[in-house]
Image: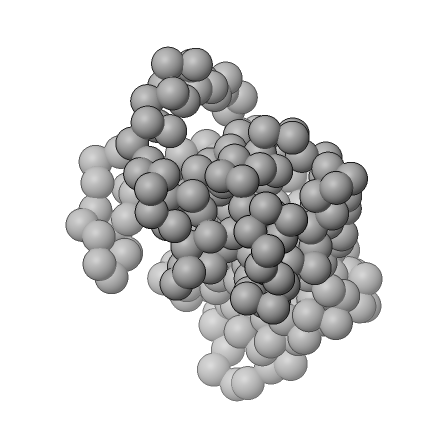
Length: 248
């Protein structure tokens, strides 16, 4: 594939190098962890670089970061655009459709971030992405739930059970605050300031923010310490939404 864009292929060296992608990824993980990046963000960058490395090897090209240029990245972009979805997945059969524009954009932005780190560390002089325009992800309008759909969703919950109370609170909180699911599940009882109508949320990169919450969500089932006479923090101090007890 790469021969369409450049001259002879760079011979792959079998000798171990400090600038081989597989070794540099380990250094990036350490750096990103100390910078407070989330495990998910680190995993996305690491897997994207590993994917690029596999592609370079399949093309008989060097995986030395100092020898990867714009031509190699452009060939990788074409590879992504022509790749079938789940073609190398261990558990899912390949599909006829290709990768989505969002997936391709995510791969390339992650690899670009990795190369930016290489430049900042002085491992490479410049990034091949300086001469490449990453294909933009398609902009799509996401349809929101209608009032009827929300009512139908809430109507499936059995509020006579503690788990139903928990589930209703989860759904109402997500609808009201637009929190990420990972942010919601990370809320502890100490993060709640219900009298003020506020919740402390920890988002990406362990960044904290204060989110207002609607009064209807604060007391969907009347479960406050004043109403029940229970100390909810004592019952569940580590997790606001307990899968065992049901009640938030």
